[in-house]
Amino acid sequence: MTTAAAASHFSLGSQAPGPRKPNLLFVYADQLRYQSLGYAGDHKAKTPNIDRLASQGVNFKNTVSVSPVCAPFRASLFTGKYTTSTGMAINEMRINPHQRCFGHVLTENGYATGYIGKWHLWANQAGNHDDPKNGFVPPGKYRLGFDGYWAAYNFNHSYYHGYYFEDTPERKRIKGYEPDVQTDMAIKFINDAARSEKPFSLFLSYGTPHDPLTADNVPAECLKRFEGVRFDLPASWQDTPDPYMDRNADPVKWLTYWKGAIPEQLRCYYAMVSNLDDNIGRLLHSLEQAGVADNTIVVFTSDHGEMFGAHGRVFKLTFYEEAARIPCLIRWPGKIPAGRVSDACVNTPDMMPTLLGLMGLPIPGDVEGMDLSLIAQGRPGPEPEAAYLQGLGHTYLWQDSFEWRALRDKQFTFAMYRRDGRELLFDNANDPHQLRNVIDDPKYAVPAARCRKLLKDKMASLKDTFETCTWYRDHWTDGNRCITASARGPFVANR
Image (cartoon, rainbow, N blue to C red; front, side, top):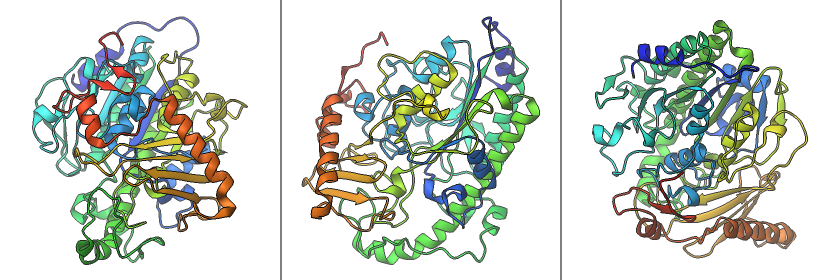
């Protein structure tokens, strides 16, 4: 569907009698960690617009990514379920469409939907992202209910060579810097939708600040903002890579490449985040200009973070704070108190039911997350005792020995590896950089036992049997990376 066609699509149908439903603008970045934002305390960050957004709504400061890697996060976001229940064990798998998803609820309740940017739930090949067969999601069930405007692609992080697909396999080339152009498209959607009788929901999925973290992949003016700024290796840097890391674990390259490259990669990362902040500012301004800011719920989050050498790791897919902890801001003027900070343990499956709860829309019965809409509004309500995290294997290959499970509450992170049963316990309140594993410290025996039991009970409730990565391939896919089952059993056509 073209932008013009999308505009005409908004005017179809009429709104049900009663108060106008709130609009939803859901913006999420790729590989943006909580720690690298100004409102989170990073003085190097240049994020005035995101910081302003944090001051205007609720900041869920203890939010984590259920599986800190792209596709598993997205599958959980749109279903409200845990990774073992979506079957999205690793990246480059095709989601099973026979699930009741966020987009279905929005469409069925009269919303004009829009989706712009990265999707990453369609491909069933490891690599070869430029092939339209791997990047174009055809209209229909695999769009998971997003039946309105569609300008998306499966995977791309070359930001000056961006593209997207609408309703045909014809690649639409982006002229300019991808996040800037996607913001232009989002503003056009907002302006068109604001003139419609129907409420709108727009999901905008930016690719930044995901690597490649090179000077030619970020606007020069944004990079210039960080001239002369010193970027150091993290406090938990170690001269040997983590043996539990699935990629980039060559001990020679760790010292000859990564140790020297990380500071400049950080500079590019912060420049990308600064550009992202510019675009958040443009989006917020567009809501004001269109006259819909007061009745639009704005959400800002990320799919996971980035390690940058912390604990001997780069990239993501781990329970450590740098990869697992993500921003989660929700603004709704007059409904959510401004400047509120919540310490609730929010996880990815909680996002869908929380937003549906705020919007007064039905929450599908198979959702596993918790509705935290009362907490968001500053009212008393139930909240999770802890957030449960799952690592089902390699980032995108069917390789064993990298599986883990973890639990994060308001003070501790508890984790265990499948390979050798190793356990870790970090007191995040007193050791925010997680420099000391206190699992064997007698002083922490009580919280260790409590976390161990919570983890075991959660696994049992989800039928999570903690298998090897290749087990999921053999039991949950058709052999071609298309998901056919999960821990809940085979998917069936009647969602």
